[in-house]
Image (cartoon, rainbow, N blue to C red; front, top):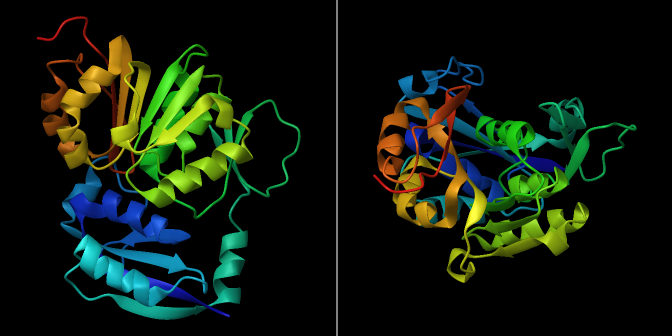
Length: 294
């Protein structure tokens, strides 16, 4: 049975958004190269921004209607350039897929695993995921940066808001690491479905609120964490200023190194100067909310 390979040229600033949307339409694997074929999986921090556009390749299972995905890219996302479609033999991609490790260690405490992975006895906290349901499997640098931060900094008594939850990986991992409770917010219906399924898989559904932003209850969280595109993060600065408790934590990811000054300026009134962590051209910013605005 043949799988579908889709290739499009993506503007650098749009990578995170389009990756997330392709995951939501059913992509099980995504890779990025510059247009002449050079891999860009391991650039130095900030190097991704040297390319104005990037070749994105996504793999879809046979059950997905690739014509509907193509229409979605053109009509909903607004892709103007050519969309190349190829058929891939199942044996070829499966052999490569099965060579991937069944688990992924994050920091000192956390481990990610596929829903059906067999895990040997370990002292690590394990988050299981239905891979391919929605954006957020721990492999993308923006997600792994967030998970590493949670592994190193999360306190057991924290109430966590995951804004733009995708697969729910950040909210669920927070609860698995001992957070008191969590809220998971997304505008995409498939993301909320994926989060509910993953929450049930990890038996944390009783501690997790899941919904769209407009239904979010009146709250102030100890930690707001958001892994979404930089433009959206910039627009959310005032909202996050209200959602984070005074002296609470804010963690932002999905930011290219070149976008740090713009994001920092947008949050400077309500939050202290950002700390930074970098991986493969992406940046994570984190700070505490000021007691009083400046």
